[in-house]
Image (tube, rainbow, N blue to C red; front, side, top):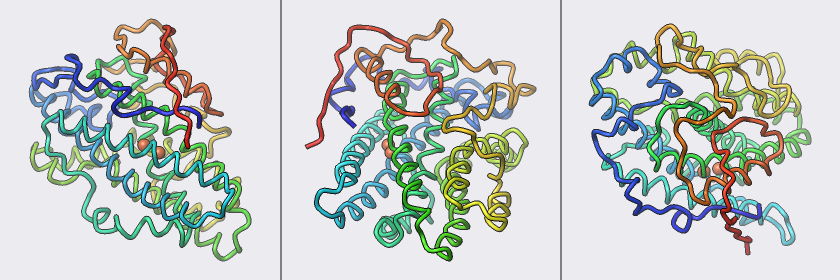
Length: 364
Ligand SMILES: [Fe+2]
Ligand SMILES: [Fe+2]
């Protein structure tokens, strides 16, 4: 909580390497992406892959910014009622500051792509002003919603940085910053829920146990599946949409694997009863809880659709990079930030050891 990134001080938006060109193959979706790894996408012409890649990445950024807007409003409601001297106040407001910076950097990215990104689906748009009130009405449910939204972004962004696919430097920098800070937000949500759920009255805890898998799956779909306008615009067949999100065995497994940590948390705080287990399974996200936070659920990113994707490669474990990001100070700070996060033993591509100076922001 001692450091955070600034959307404008830490990112040089005017850099020539940030210029977006519509013939730049670095906009092709990574094989870590649910659609990018599908054989239909890989069979498209390069120009179509780029157009779809640009639109998808801009829409993911838009959805992320909108989700964070809901989250910040919830944190404001929650912190408004906290008593003087509460350590949670400082954390919640600090997290809001970080999320506001994320919203600004996502919007900068979207605007530079030139894509008029649609953002979240209608139901989430309609509920976006009501959902933040759950932070005061049912804070535990709210923080499970926070986890439900942050985990899919964390997992998909970490998967992206683990690949050796070329990534546009603007996306790479934004994702690296986001990943570093989200890990801390996820750690806070886990700590908050670990402390508060056990003390809930039994009936409330039972209801929460059924709510968690539902909101987790609902938000996962809302955040990861592009809107129907996207599929219509690029004439993506229904079967591809179904398979990629989430009917074929590999995408079903990726979906389940995303939530090992959440299942572990639920088990630890008494939210895994026989009925809840059925709901988890019915939502397609049941499975073994992680043994510790950040436990890898899969050996290999490429194994999912190996048969479909000759480009699929092994999970990077810190070997020599064939695509070095040019981060300046940011790469160092990403590493510093990630090193601070307990239970995050995951590999990532930013192994720079330059002489960058950490940019300290002490929350007021
Ligand atoms: Fe964020
Ligand atoms: Fe966050």
